[in-house]
Image 1: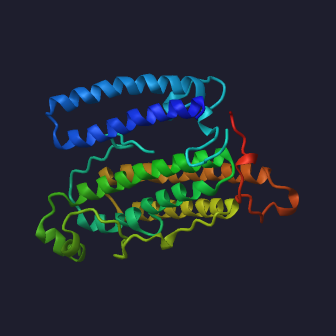
Image 2: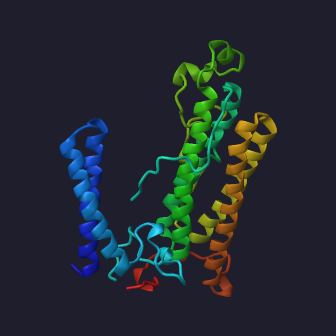
Length: 84
Length: 206
């Protein structure tokens, strides 16, 4: 696993955790423990996101940092299983 | 993957229920040139596209079409909210009402349920982009026809926004087709299948 894959995996773990807790919170909106868990992973997610974006480019369009070129179009795209 | 923003792309504020209008506008949800078909078409076609700019535009227009599915649905919801049984009967909305009440179901104005038979994914870049250009024009003319049939300014306003988006998408797909053709040689400028393949030829940052 190269650096990009390691960082991506970290982001995917955080995001999936947030997705899972959000579904639980949809049906338990006042569950304090779940609310705290969500906040904890939100902070970890932000850290993982910033590190990935700095080195490997945007996850969403708003992550654009480069002032001279729209990085969004650059491959590989998520469905491509290419050696990069 | 996708995430959801809890807002419409453009505001919808309809004061007067009107099931007769809903009967017509529903075609832009689930009809032959509707928004659900557009989203499905572009988001499915992007996998076989060989060029990064084309993958990007299909991803981003396809995503915007999902927002248009929600916009058209919001229009239909507000047009059928608080309608009376008398309105349902007088407007001929009873044939929809019997199956769906005031639920939002993807179908054409004719009553035909949404179907992917109205779109193609050929795996061929030029064939797909040429279909996409036609699709945007067909959606634009459907909105033109809706504007000929609808008087209420609360309904016309978001419909005009949706019509404008078809024109912008047509422009962007035209540019995507032009960029694709620039990569072909003069012998096969109009007939070529560049989409078999090929991670190795893709430009990549890393």
